Length: 223
Image 1 (spheres, rainbow, N blue to C red):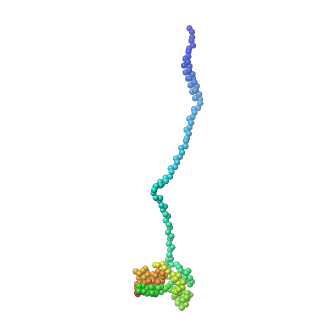
Image 2: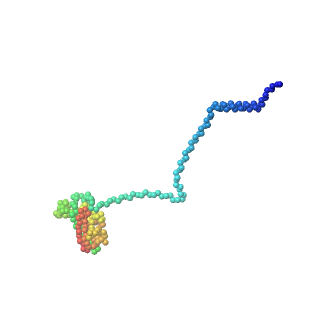
């Protein structure tokens, strides 16, 4: 009886080689460390751009707004002199300075059918030395603040009488029967250019008073 070598099919051998090769590859892969997956790349996100400021949309064809003008400052009015206070007129009066007002004389200066004109004169004294020093050499002790026609007379009269309480002009304050003279309806009226004079339209008791020490003169008018 003869022994025969078993035949190996070619297909079977090829399969065996493939299995062996796969086994070897798997062994090698176990010995190497596993490869780490790459970290994801961080990409910076740009910040959003700021929103543009809103601007007024011009109105086509409309009138342009006019700027509001700034208010102008009004100049403050200069305060006028206070009647009966201070030493107003002293510098222009000069020397010698008159003493305090002591009397006011009043007389009827002019007469007409419609009105009379009163005139007043402030007097100082008794002081005969002062009166003699300013030119009154007749020995009088009561006198006007300066002789008639002297350029210092008006400022010296202002020194002793002050300004009228109603008009603010240099001279006495006039009243008829105790009421200020404000025009024909009141029976009397101040003379605009001379506070020492008064127009009278009616009878009554008229007074002219200094505005510093309250000295008054008085006259009765029977018109």
